[in-house]
Structures are given as structure tokens and as C-alpha cells.
Length: 192
Image 1 (cartoon, rainbow, N blue to C red):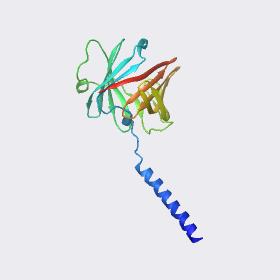
Image 2: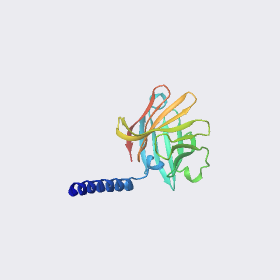
Image 3: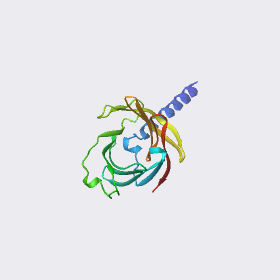
Image 4: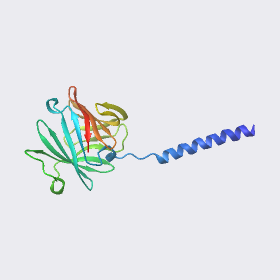
């Protein structure tokens, strides 16, 4: 009888220890975990007139990332500011002609659009300056694009009757977005 009690207590002790060890080793997810950390060009289907578009993550300085987006309608440069707590689009500008090499060094912030915010858990909400609302509506969502399968967080944006749902994968960022009446942008290529 003593051996059975000892065995049960020993097993419970081992299980409790493993649970504590697993909790200590779980990495706290940050907002910037869901954004590219190195230069890359991402190709998407969808976009204006369903012609597709590309996003070139080409310049990383301190906590800022420059993104040049090209599609058949308009070219835009974005600057994002990254922290553990949030990813914020702090600048955007339509480009006529050719992109410059470096917008980060001389830009003046003209936006304050938080696109990812902690805690990374279902139900996290935040508002935009224009009255819109973002919400993390799911985590650990499996999304398949023509390029592959990704484990993502789902962020829903709504403003009046407009709604979009974006899916972000760790270290890659946006992999899919559904907006309006069945418009879909999907990741179809990544190059370095």
C-alpha cells in the first residue's frame, strides 16, 4: 500500500514539475514576432483589379522597417515602427516615378496606425484615429496560401460596414487578407 501511494505521489510530482518547466520555457509572444525581421520581397495575388502586388521589406534601421509596395495602380512607401508591444505604421506616401533608397532617415510621421498589439490573445482590441477598431479574433489559425501553410494570428478590422480580416505568421508578417465583398490577397512568393 505504501509503495502504491509513493508511486502515485512520485508520478504527480513528475507531472507537476514538467508542467512548471513547460510554462517557464514558453516564449512570451510579442507584436514584432509577427513582422519580417530581415529583408525580403513578398508577392501577393489580389490587389487592385486582381493584378497582384509586391511588398519589398528593404531597409531596417533601429526599430523601423521601410516597405515599398508596388501594384498596377499606385506605388506606396510605408514605414513601420516595431516594439514588443505593438507594430505601428507611422508613415505612408504615394510615390510617383521611382522609389528613393532611404525614406527612414528623413521621414516625418504622418500616420499612427497600430496593426498588431499585445497581448497576443483572442479578444485584444484597439481603436484607430479614424474610428475603426482592430481585434485579435483568433490565434493559432492554420492558413493555406498558394505558397504554403502557416500558423497565424487573425486580426479583424472594422469601420462602419467595412470589414477586413488579416492573417499574420511569425517572422513573415501578413500572409492573407480578406476584405470587402470577397476580395482576397494571398502570399504567393517570397524572395530574399
